Image (cartoon, rainbow, N blue to C red; front, side):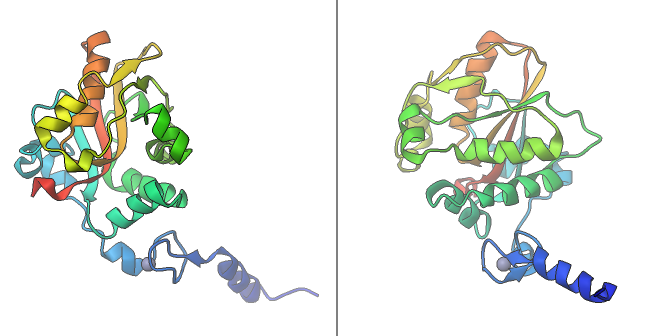
Length: 231
Ligand SMILES: [Zn+2]
């Protein structure tokens, strides 16, 4: 028996519904419209799509050696909950939600894009205990959206624990020479991707490692959220 088209359409719509990752109510998308409304996204066009030009953000970052910073918003509800879920509760679907958000909010087709995405690596021991790298999970979804390749260019040699308890200066000392280049880069522009940027020490240390080998490399830092330490 043929079903009327309207009924098929309704069934299809029903099948495509899912639960919002944050509030669990039925939603067409990974985040429902109400939770999306809570996203306090940065006005990136006001800082020419480079948060290093925004004094409020720039003042907390020491001396960045990377050239450009992009992020969706501050590390507060609901971005903090999505990132914590991804990082500590194995909610790997959250990676798709934040990657989609970054793609639609922070990237502009008319701007030159980097040649590759380099997710910030975890130290081997942390990777073994977590069994995945949250930055890599986000990078994989971003690669699908953008068509950019993801490469694991560096290894993390130092296990830097309890970063959140440390001051900016301690973090910088803690992360000095924390990374080693493990494969050659044959590109001119890269994006280092991390879930959250606090003092920028991690991205800066990784950038220093890349620049030691490729002084002319153009480096963008891509982060989902910036910590409120900058406020
Ligand atoms: Zn919701």
